[in-house]
Length: 399
Image 1 (spheres, one colour):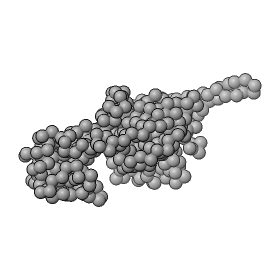
Image 2: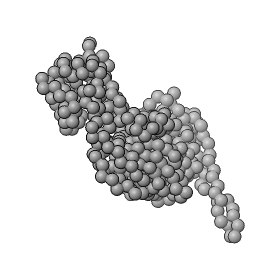
Image 3: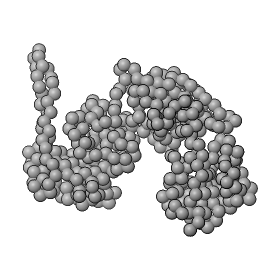
Image 4: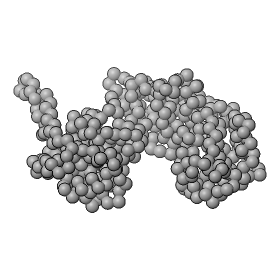
């Protein structure tokens, strides 16, 4: 099958910035799909022109209905970098599509800033919750962010200030490569620019001495979470995440999620991870949602239900943490749903749940450990060790 669908990246310089071969593809197109500004940049009066459909998912149906025609989809910059190309590519065979890349907004912004792309983080909040950038706020980190509108830089400036990064340097770059290219510079604490709606934000994070240090490595302080006292404590949480092994794009079931501390740390630990928290108590689901938003992982999905019944119909996971609702039935439902090479970790504090883990360990193998934590605390006028309740942890990998 020969390619009939061309996905063309185009910049602010329009047709002039395209190669002769790509210009010929647009000139020969029978159908051109894109936004209003794309049609202005690459006008072809002979072609049928389609605007982005609403909802956007309808685009795939529109393209399928025109299979066999010469179809061009116009996208800004590189169509395979935080753009429409990847979405379309999941629904058509590679033989049907030819991609025509253009310089991305990230590459243009890095050139304007004089930054090495190997030494920075790229992310998009375009059409996505702006709060997800919070997880990337770290001392001395450089960020390039595709924004979602004119108000986004001010929102990000507020996030920086609230976390002690008010002296971070911010630059908004708009219409890069076009006649109306514009640049706006300032500090997060003083940001008051009115900027165009389509822009790329460059941030050079500068931490104050009292800035919040929230690394992506698991083991955030208990105090950064809103909780009711019932949560997986910091040291145990770090050990738990080590056994769950967060990986790019992997899905976690957090069974008995409580305030969501394990799911939140999972989502922060690797890019594009996903998590479903199952929790029957509404107050704890509320806390989990608040923690996810405050710590930069707003995509946490929360399910109201009691296990094992609440697990039915959920997408099979790559990892499962059982922090509540432990039973033989829950384990069986989790184990059956777990994907090959999936990791399961269950923590227990009570003698009854520890006894159950011992039986499950005898039947299924894996690793059984006890984690005992002591924290220094005041003892009269001196200091002594205050023990936390020991936690029995069972972990295994599905082979």
